[in-house]
Length: 439
Image (cartoon, rainbow, N blue to C red):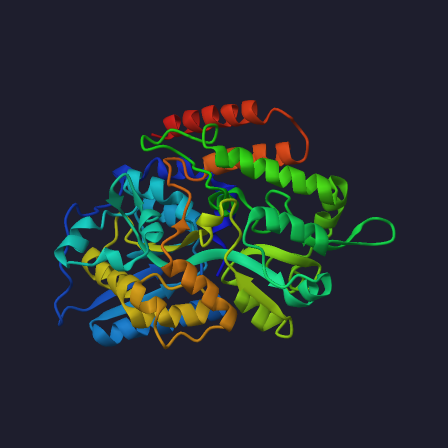
């Protein structure tokens, strides 16, 4: 599955695209009924899937068609969020849309681009408690549920067992202090002083070492109950940036810059962890599928990612794929039946998890004996069921606030400023100002 974090790159364009959504289409304010058994309906489903994954999605939805033979599904791939948004604005929206970006849920819900599902959920008595709280959170905005979760990404620690054995390390680290110590011990240098093998790359934005994925491990909070930014007042942010900067300096800032410049593409067989050039990374469960396909001989383990507070061990960042009914959908009643089937029923969720290598998003699917995934995948199933998943909060302007923190994180860690407190205060002001404009 294409990673949802890439959506941050497009956050500036998304508010403009969604601004005109509220006056388009005929989205219902109530729950429409499913078509009668003798009423033929064709549902158009858009997603960004392609090739094998698109074919697999179609096979999963065939199960729905068997239950509802009067409902035919047109499975359309290579449709990203921009195309979905444009179709809504143009009055040509699909009946069902699958999005890889939870960062846009605030805009989808507040603008009406995705229809409110609350009346359907209430009418059909859907038990949302079967879905992990964090996944419930990233599919709602200000009390409005306009999407359902459809598999999740859960982040943990990947470590190279051979490199650990060579360095005399018997178990994966559980605290950030242990992670730093192990990273230094695992880092190997060439004769010219350049990095041969990196124990861990603390560079902000490198692979999945992002502010979203790392901040929960330090207890860093994004906002308070009123929606105001807390990046300047939540001490976890200072702890995180100081930890990154300290480890960067210990390994060598210039050396890390040179090393990351030559790194293999993250989503290819040349990924530096997969080729043994990095001993430890933070990454999602989907990496197990890459490793199985590209480097089946690599001896590696997975574990919860370390935390600053030992009591918080088991905390993990999560995000995922979402599914909803766009405004203007021609067959909203039938669309809801498909959305409900795909997001709440064990069989399709397990089928998708096996196909895509992602974490299912209901309690029953998480413990299904039909899951056929690598042994290292168990870490992510346990994290998902452990009650400590966290996600960055939705906002009215997509992921703009994430970009603000990414920029300052990289600046501070690389020595562009020594004013950590002042920089965080400025970041908080910028985030609040951006959010105010997006209301």
